[in-house]
Image 1 (cartoon, helix red, strand yellow):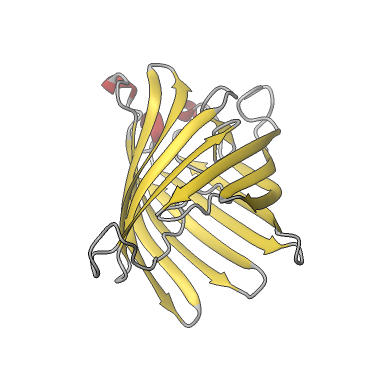
Image 2 (cartoon, one colour):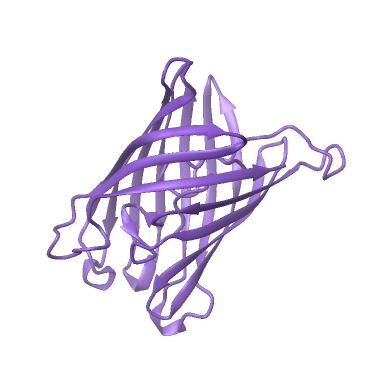
Length: 244
């Protein structure tokens, strides 16, 4: 259940996962016209996906490798440690197509969430389709997205997630204000373990010596009696670096 690293960039600032793949200029790793390869490595104090901890509130190491072509096509792999019953690793494979029209950036794609080593009867693995649109308004930028799975995590039926994310710089300080909000609809709430719910986050980001840093407050509206530890409010620190 990937949330943090945005495909083809280190813009890890929003929680709706995988979000916009940005077209990049060529680098020296590939011949001219063959696109660009980008790698990102990072760590997070608590890997939360749509507001719910995937690591039992423990830290996670995460990384991605992305390929993006100037024609808008992108592919990538992302991985993280998790702490589920019978699963310690998550690997996400994703791809899609980005394009711009009248000042808006569109992203259409799909994501496959894979938990290697997990018992197949648990049915952790699933796919999602993604449609997102974003716009740069000058000092601030924002994006909205929809993610649909016909057979969501742990055989919980069809699921739909709507997300919103925004970023705005704080004058000339180098800091940015980061915010996100989303709502998850799930067909079989009993199988998933939680009802339909909202999640949100608010924080700050900063770049220091080539590292992207963020500190945010994240929470959900799931009742503490249903999810006392994994869904409660928390502060999350993230550090990552991109290589291209």
